[in-house]
Amino acid sequence: MHVLDTCILISATTNETQTERVLQWLARHVKEPLAINDWTMVETAAALMLKQRQGLLTQEQHSHAMSELRLRRRSFYRLEVRRDHFALAQQICQRGTHGLRAGDALHVAVALMNHATPVTTDAALLNASGAYGLRCEAP
Image 1 (cartoon, rainbow, N blue to C red):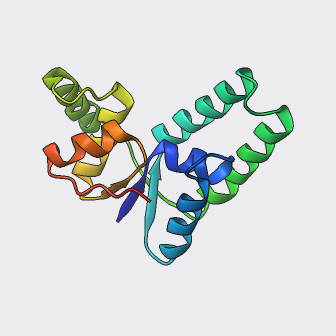
Image 2 (image 1 turned 60 degrees about the vertical axis):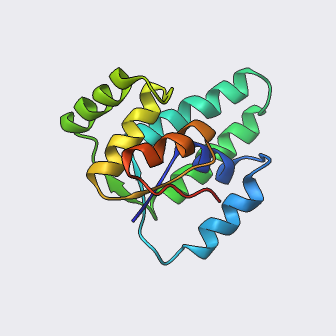
């Protein structure tokens, strides 16, 4: 199972440099189980609002991206984020050797505990995943 990172959802719903690659990757994997979690949805909503506040998205573009996100969300398997995921994410953060932000540590923990392959364009997450035994994919 592939678990999608926030940057994948941002690229799939807005016009980014990676958008075409991400959309092609999603199209190639449409018949596979693709997963997200509630934390990813929170991060994505926050990132889209930040883009609007920074003037990178108009209100209309933001609304369109949120609508697209709601549509896409229906096709994804939802992984539950549990207390043990947060505990593992805390351990990952305490190691501090890979420079992961708290949200990325949580993504790693969810992927590890669900035996999932993270899909991301985030360089820090790509670099750190191998250290935790994850085979991470980048579109």
